[in-house]
Structures are given as C-alpha cells and as structure tokens.
Image (cartoon, rainbow, N blue to C red; front, side, top):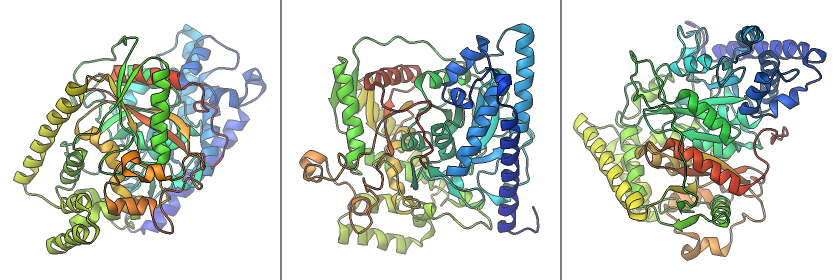
Length: 579
C-alpha cells in the first residue's frame, strides 16, 4: 500500500468488503428455497450451535453445512448493514468448505467433528491464510496471512467453517469498538452506545444471530465487556488453556499479562461445546500448553457464591447493581448460599494493570497507528505517559487537592515508562497481589464462585471511554489474578427501575462513590454517561468468577445461574433488528 494515503486505503478496503457482502447476498438468496425442504433461514439462525450440529447429524430435511453457511452469511450481511461489525468476508471459501463437508457426510454419514458445519466468526486478530489481519491499522492492509492461527486449525479440524472476521478498537486496548479502517461498531440494541471491546464485533454479531459461534480474546475484559453490553455469553479461560499462536497483537513479547483466547456464543451449551474443542490443544513446536483437555466436573447440589454489587474504586450504576441482585435472588430461590463481601484492595490490582501495560509508555502499542488518526478512546489511556513528568505530577496534585481524588491521582501517576528494574518490581507486585487475593477471598470465605458486575455501566455513549477507560478495572482485576470467568446475560436496562434514587446515592446503602472524578463523569453534569432513559433495553450481564484452572466449574456454574434466572429473552432469536 506504499504511496497511498490512509484515507485511500480505507476507501478501497471498505469498497472491497461491500463488494464481497453484495456477493454474499446474491449467492445466499439464490441458494435458499425448495431445495432446502422448505426450511427457512430464520429457523437456522435462531438455532443454537449445538442444535445445528444435531440437525445436520440427524439428516433433518434441509439441514446441511451449505444451507447453514448461506443462512448465517445472509444474517451477517444484514447485521453488518445495521451495526458495522464485519471486517474480512470469507464467504466464498466457507461455501466451498461447506460443500466438501456435505459431500463427505453424504458418503460416510459421520460428522467431521463437534463443530461440523457451523459458520464460525473470528475476531480480526486471528490469522486466516489468504486474508488480512489488520486489527484496524491501515499500515497492515494488503498483508494476507500465510498460515492459520492455531485456534483456527482446531476449529477446522472439528468441522467448523470460518466465514467472517469481526471488528476491534484501534490497538485493542479499549472497551469500545472503532478504528479508522473499518469504522465504528454499534450496540445491537442502541445505535448511540458501544457494543464493547475489544472483541466487540464478535459479541455484536453473535447478538444479531450472525454467527453460530465466535472466538475472541481478552487481556483486560475484551471477551466479557462486549458480551455483557451485547447480551450474549462468553468465557475468559485461565491462562495456558487455549492456544495463542497465530493471533496478532500490538505488543508482541509482552507477557506480564497474557491475552487469552475464548468463545462467544448464544447459550451456555455452546460455550461448553467450543471449550471442549479448544482446551489443552496446541502446536508443541510453537506454543507448548499443559495437555489439559476439557474435564467433566460435577457440582455439589448447594453452592456457595460470594457477590458484590459495587466496589470501592468505581461506584456501580443502579442498573448493573440490579443485575447482580436479581442473579443472587434467583440463586437463593434454588437453595444456593450467597454471601455479600467487599473486594479486598482492588485499587492495587488496577494500579498494577496500569503500571504493567504502560511500561514502555505505550510506544510499541501506538507505533502501529502510523498515519491513521488516533481514536479518541485512547485519550486517557495514553495521556499520562505522553506528558512530561512535572506536568503529570501537577495534574495528580490538582486531582488530590481540588477534587480529593487519591485513586485517580495515583492511577494516572502510574501511567509512564519504566526501567527494567521497575518493571520487574511491578511484576513482583502482581504476584504478591495474586497471593493476597487468594488468601482474602477464596481461603477466607470458601466460595465456589463469585457473582459480580461486568462493568459499572450498562454501556457508554460512543467515545465515552475517552474519559472512562478506568471502568475496565471491573474486569481487568481478574486478568491480574488470572481467574476464569463466564458472562451470563441477566436482564435489560429499565428506565424506571434503574433511575438514580436516594438509596443508591447514600453511601451507606448504595456504596461509596469511589473516584470523585470518574463518578462525576458517569453520573453528574448536563450529559452524564449513565442515562437509563437513553439506555433503556440495553442488556445487563454478570461475571461468574472461578478459581484458576477451574474453567470447567465456571461453565457448570454458568449453567446453574442461567437455569435459575429462567427464560428472559436472551439466546438465539432474541435480536429483532433494533439497532
């Protein structure tokens, strides 16, 4: 792409995507109708991944890998038109793979594997041979991958069919989903709010029934925040359970906090299905993982859950507190014990996350932006490391003196480049906090799992994270301590139920305000980020947290929570094209 302006590259790349999507619509519509035995596309996309494989295996009339790929490709094209979630379009290759699977199945009457015939969406960071992995950088356009990511190999070996890649935020260190190359992805339930990030395109597409199953990654909440904002299910595994090789990132070699790959789906059984395929499998030459496949576990009939509705650092909104309370109430009705507790010094986990991720002043992270304009969501994230030391110190002094905000001041002061010795000290601090957290949560209380908010807000208006990036500390805490976590959708914002009340405002009943500066941006002024009227209908989820290496127990606890909550308008068929 030498010699072309970034704007020209954007225009050409988006035009190519539009052309390929037009082909999807033309070919997809030409392949539906009588030959499918009267089966409607809606019947297909409103089925879970597990149900799709069962129908293909049972030779149910009309259910073939090709008909399934066509149906989901058409729905993905529809979702793209409404919320802009797709990047690379791989439909032609997917259709060919589907036909090969159908031919093989017609001959053997055996499915290739547990993902047989499923159209799979992939976060843009995964390499797929023959396609770009730009993650939103124009400098990375026109450099197709020459290999598949290891997780893609596992998907194909199980019969899955990658057919689209999905959008991410610039640098993937943001919980929104916009970049200069592909544009902004919208929340499926509110065009004025973000779908979350960095696996935002994945969650948004899944919410629109645009993929049978998807895969993203998470280093600070990137699987969980978009799943929570978009009303779908996800699993952030423990480190070293899922292969990472072949996934591109902005800071290769940074391993103080490891990004982990995991599934996004529309039901807990689909999350389990995906996890059984990808756990404990790796290329021993490039990335040896502990050979620990998915293990079946049996839960006791009565579980002990810890829960918190807010935390000392950032006050959680009424809507997100209600999601936790409704989950706790549902679990108690099923006979489970739920004990409220206070997070122990989660401020230190936030400080460590900032210190480690900013260790080179974000120079490597932002070096790939090149001629592209920097997205506004990176403003606060990168500001501290850009300022001269005395200016940063002055800003922190003002925050402490004028606003009384020790939390904001300390976190902002920790965003700067470090020496090797200082980096090692922060890595040691992380290890010490892991031990501290285990002793003061798991050993002290004896919980089976934890129920807690995904984020302090149901979502943010587009660009809102420019000043509210610290909201990601609700999820990054569990990256610091390396815990497996599942996301379960619970309910939706209700403009009446979730209004700010005196009880919520009172610290004695609603919790402390945490950082005054962050609190003011969230809840005060003419245009606060939290507006339950504007957010009405946006999904609300919860995190289900387990101990390290108890990923399978987390999946089983997700089933318990999902069953306890009952039918509530989530899963396949929930989206009605609202955005």
